[in-house]
Length: 347
Image 1 (tube, rainbow, N blue to C red):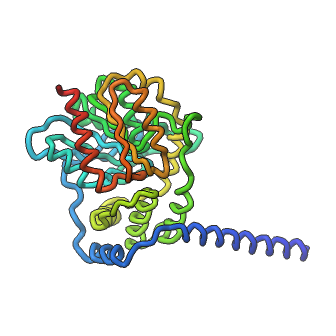
Image 2: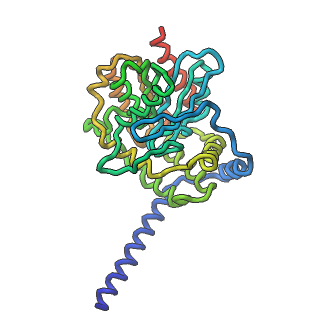
Image 3: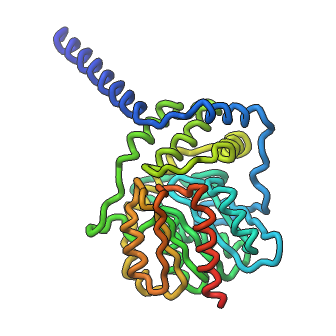
């Protein structure tokens, strides 16, 4: 019995050491914040909480979910409605303010919303893997917002997982879709002819959580948001505008529900469970813009190249110095191309 206890004790120590080693390795791969980055974060924390929500807000009911949305009106005459659909584990506030401004200043109403299990969106049921919701269900959330606002048609813009959802809206609800913009996304992430989604960022992402705290204090959670932004850039070299990201993170933590890290796992399961959309996408008849960064560390730009080849009325834009994010340096180019795509249908 004493021998068994000794073996169990030693095994426990080994497991702890292995976990510590893995944790140290994960943390060592996390990008570091500069002194200037930290100074900006400190300044943001000392300043009054910024006003981030400026439009009309509300909730749409979709299945057993209440989906929070914000409706942002243009400064002048409205040319149409654009619905922004964010990626895995992200809420409405992830969209860069400058990206939204480009659209509203061009005369478009913008609607952004919190995905299931993010932000202020709530549900009456707990997520279970055996009965997980699908990307099709999440596409239904988008239509529920349109119905709530009594909007017949819209331009759909999706990033990453959001691009997959936007594709499903275009496929399943063609009568509600004016145009489609798919950013750093795929028509089938499991396509055997293309590179699979990379796991290279998983270690650094976990490391960012370990380093800055699973829950962490306010400063730690803001740092985690900035570090994860750097991770998603991959090998891209563009500068990050630290202040607005820190301000939005502070607002999210103080005025909303903060960040639900489990939502990313649930959204990822929806992505894995999704069927290929390539055949259906080859049959859609709407102006489509496909955008991807050549340095994307998550989904290879080859996925977007294939999308552009199979979608009949599509245009492809590959941005050299862009990872799996929306860098400030590319926002003007992307938004201008999107507006041109919107106008193709108007003409």
